[in-house]
Image 1 (cartoon, one colour):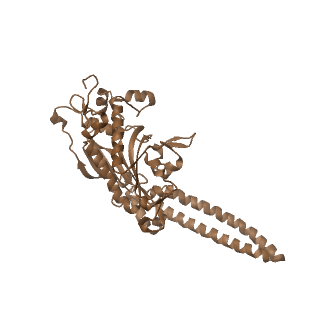
Image 2 (cartoon, one colour):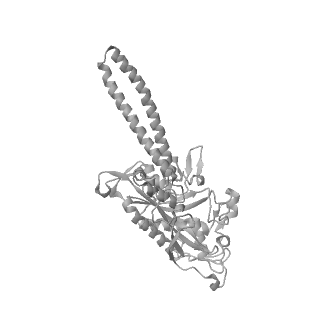
Image 3 (cartoon, rainbow, N blue to C red):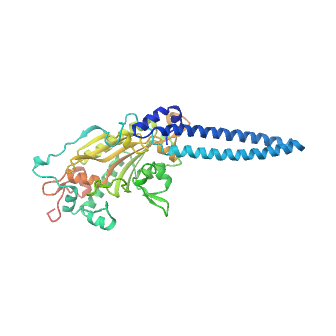
Length: 430
């Protein structure tokens, strides 16, 4: 959640951020009213409690009718105190509920608008001209079938739509990508992690995934646990209820984990293949730092994603995501979108978000000694996808395919595939 002081001191900034997200700014007035009511109820309760304590001190010295009057007054005051305490609890809950539904204040540099209002920042690599090469590109499913690397028919038979098997070289390609991504991240200073894929409600809510994204989350009601849609969730909760020393920051983690998404609202989108699925594996970067350092860290995470996609020799572009397409936790997000030949467009492969103190406030993660101060403040958190496996496989197969259905392997990935420099269709010579 955002800092309540920002709401009180600069409500116009919060209103403007809501409008850039394409959301109503009326919630700001509702919050200001709720905050005023909450603070008034606290003051009223404290006045009555002080009066109650003062009255209690008079009773022992009182005699006769005076004592009886004071006791009667105490009884009446106790009822008022109890009512004031209940009113305070209601006001607190009203304010907390409204605050929980308010997204982070979008960065003023984030483009206003929705999904289609992004700004393209840069292009990398060259898009292949398949016409000039004399053949039409096959899509990843045709290539995956020829390579005996992807089996969506049996995935659907076993688990339903948007599930799949990676088989043979497909399975080996996933393992190679995970190993390469984890090793690269470790070289950049990240601590490798294998986090749990099931989390308690607080971890899911604290990281901001039970608000606007709740419909996309799998819940196991018998255990009151959630399947994570990204390892951002357990990594964000890793230091919950902890006080971190500023000298220990930044703390950088990289996790490999399965991810589960219901893909609510995606009916009819990307129904062919493995681009949009209910389960996939992903390598995710995560950083704890201070707000002051978070903006430079955001650029650093983006630079790692650029380096990764460049190593895979994929043509891609970087976009500044519009405010209305940000998650609730983020103030700004950059996406790296790879060119998918058979779709004739760029599609998201990686993203990185700066969540400033939004998640840390919810999860009670504080920093002591930031800027040499002795006081504490909420930490800042950032996340960045390094490798979403199925989408990366889609991009690799389609961009590096050859006329006969073989797929060239980029040089940096070859050591993780037992030195293979090309994947050949099943039944051909290795």
